[in-house]
Image 1 (cartoon, rainbow over the protein chains, first blue to last red):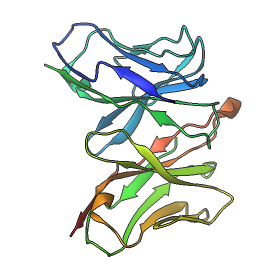
Image 2 (image 1 turned 180 degrees about the horizontal axis):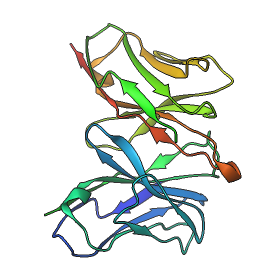
Image 3 (image 1 turned 180 degrees about the vertical axis):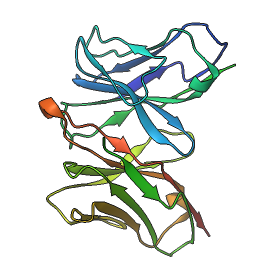
Length: 114
Length: 115
């Protein structure tokens, strides 16, 4: 079954404590991306990757890091989380970098930073 | 850069009525316009999409129209049912250098269908 898997699904953490949200896809997709969803703001792109070792900033990259060492994995790293990073996070993947290919979303990760 | 505005932010209709959600985009190079439905606590799901070379597309009770000149596109849901209640997101996809298409999302419309 084609899927994008994120972990953890729910996390409450404290300010400054480094955390990583993992994302893995089993479809051999080149393109992967992270979004955050906040009320009234829709989904905003944090970082994206067009292939292994190729990553770039999205619209709201501040406070986040990513890596793409393997094609299937694209972890999101919060080195020093702050309360304004409390949000719902979605990982997504699709075949290729051009539009028109279906984008697959993970189930989402609810992150609360206190 | 590309900006996508979506209206209304909330929409309440009676079961059986039609619902229309409108989006405008700023980048005339955008060539792909998907619509996503997100039920409470779940991931966004693609429900319909349209490309810039097509003016209208229909799939059962849902349809999307695109006006490239005015740079706006709309989602139409007919004969609404309670299970249509969800948040709907439009998106536009401008083409960047290297052939990369980015998806820019609207802020979302919360649709409530009342029995």
